[in-house]
Every structure is written in C-alpha cells, then in structure tokens.
Length: 171
Image: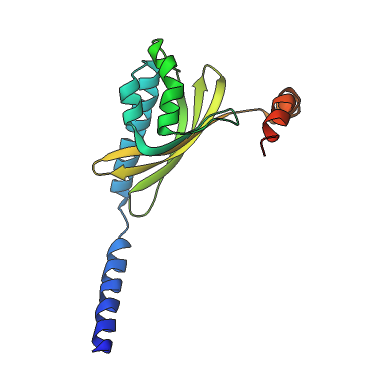
C-alpha cells in the first residue's frame, strides 16, 4: 500500500515537472517581446501625458519602484502618493526610449529588461521585471538610474558626499 502511494506521487511529480519544463517557441518569444515593449512604451507615454490611472494600471499591486535618490524605494501605493502631485500638474515626467533589451524566461511568464532613456535628467537607464497575469503583463519591479560617464564619477562622488554622509547615519 505504501509502495503504491509513493509510486502514485512519483508519477504525479514527474508529470507536473515535465509539463512545467515546456519551453516557449521562438515565435512566442518574439510575440512576448512585442507585447512587453508596448506595455513599457504605453507606461512611459502615460507619464508624459499625466495619465495617472493608465500609468499605475501597468504596475502590479505589489510592484516596487526604485528611483534615482537613495531614499526612493517605494511600493506601488507609496509611489502613487509621491507621484500624484506631478500628475495633477498636467505632466509627470517624459522618458523616451533610446534602446531596450528584453529577456524572456523559458516558460514565457516573466521577463526582465534594461533600457536606455532620454529624460529631463539627461540620459538614464531603467531596468525591471514584468510578470504575465492572466492575459496582461504587469510591471513588478522598476529601477531608474542616472548614467554617469566614468570620467565624471569622482566629481559626482564629491558632489553627493554630504547627502550620502547624512543618509548613511540611518544605518
């Protein structure tokens, strides 16, 4: 009896395991990249048009947004509260994608990406993760970084030293 129970669970484990290892096709990968590209482009467009509802509808309920300041590590509700005054003024921010790389996991249910952006802060880099929920893609995690040419790093370190010293006292 125990032998049959173990064999039954072993069979189920093998069937479930083999089924979940199905890899998506090249065509499916291309389609996913097109869909994710559209979501991200629409997300950036919604910010430039100050469309608060559309912008935040692209983000998952448990998403995280990490901004350029060391203090900017927000969950969706915190980011909405921070962003609302900017959207209410009629234009939040404007990011134009210069290039974007999208990577798809083998089962096609999540992607990660990096993008180079032209922004009001100059050239920035964004990166993040999206997950497919039902028939739509949701941004789970986004990180915005200001790019700094290597030859300017020492000047930037010096410029931010005072703020860094104050910030690090919290730790």
